[in-house]
Image (tube, rainbow, N blue to C red):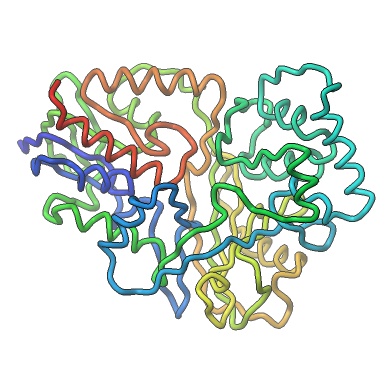
Length: 422
């Protein structure tokens, strides 16, 4: 039997960051997939650069970015000021919707401004929202919610927004007040968390490779899924039948699956999520310029967002990622014909565009549902596991909505804690 001090399950961003930070060299990283990276993988095909989904790094701490760049080669890394638009009424307005209502048709603008003002005025009735839908309505009024916030987020999360906690989107949700909105009429300012981002010319997987430089290659096993865990014996069993004894575990696989595998009792009904089907599409020539991604709230379109790699990397052919939100139990079906029809209907491609190359990626889970039940059950389950030496971290391991940098910092902090005297 193999014995290891620290067993790491998952060689995505979180797992690799943790492995590279450990002071002890007695660790082993097991990855079920045939390649490291988790969801942060890149395909380069027929001259197109695609990620499994749009992975754009937004660094709040310069030292995090510096650490990664110091471990990358001399390839070009684009430093980009975000150009995000919203498809509305046959045209485009700037994102976020609630801060750019002055770009709407006159009637829609007045309706949104009226409802926003009275939602935020001192004379508004006291409202104590207990779910995300009520929070949005109380903060922005009916018109903004009805025209964008409700339909867009329903397409992303594929659930009733009343089921989500008021803090479901946390710091990632732009929250201007009415004064900010009015000031933005004359002096536009994007102060959202992702106003700028970086992107390597060979895709986001380059950041994964940078993290992996701090990890012993011999300590990473790909194609090696963990299928069983005995907390009493402190052993895991892999798909090949191997048993590995551990002192501690760091896991970034989805929390419900980890708890189930470890035999920890939990409320299955507390955890729900949406899937995202990503279409990476390469066309023979350019399409819209001066935009990096377009949000599409209309329920008449299958996708909720379209991103333009070609406008980030400055290439001469249109390279898209198109995201379609699905329920966790949605059956597999060929959505590409509908996606292409909707891209034409939205004016992103026309009849003369030729599809040169494409790939389809299913992210399952994609967006976790931060319901009141999940926010109560997830910490309880994580604590039970941690008490037995199993630390569940990362977006899906902690069951939270966070940035890629957040995952790196969480992993580093956890690894550092093992070096502290108990």
